[in-house]
Length: 104
Image 1 (cartoon, rainbow, N blue to C red):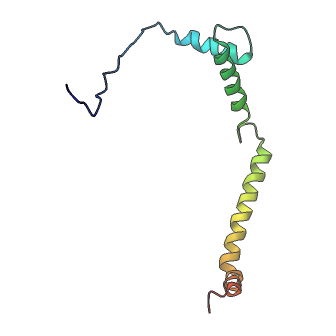
Image 2 (cartoon, one colour):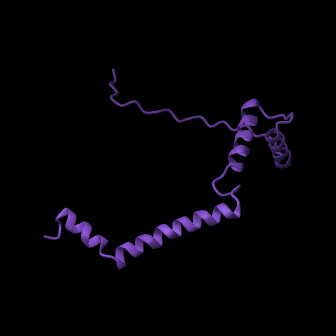
Image 3 (cartoon, rainbow, N blue to C red):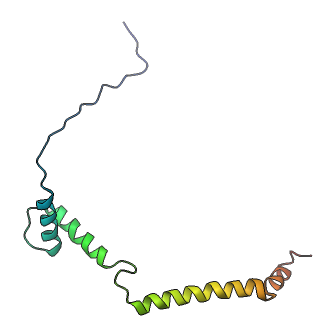
């Protein structure tokens, strides 16, 4: 009788079922599903397409107006310039270090 301590795995089977793929028809069906029209896609695929379309519209800067982009840029520029000014042109850092007693 033969004792085997390690079982060797059997080779996995490879199954490939070729099918015809029409890229234009697939794109057309996805677009119909995004718009909520009747399409040949499954319910899950059509819901996924609709969610993807909604998330694309709600991007961070995609729907933002030029004024809001300018305000974001101005705010970040103000924070950066203010930080550089505090660090290099005032004695704020020296006072902060002295407050914690590190420089003694």
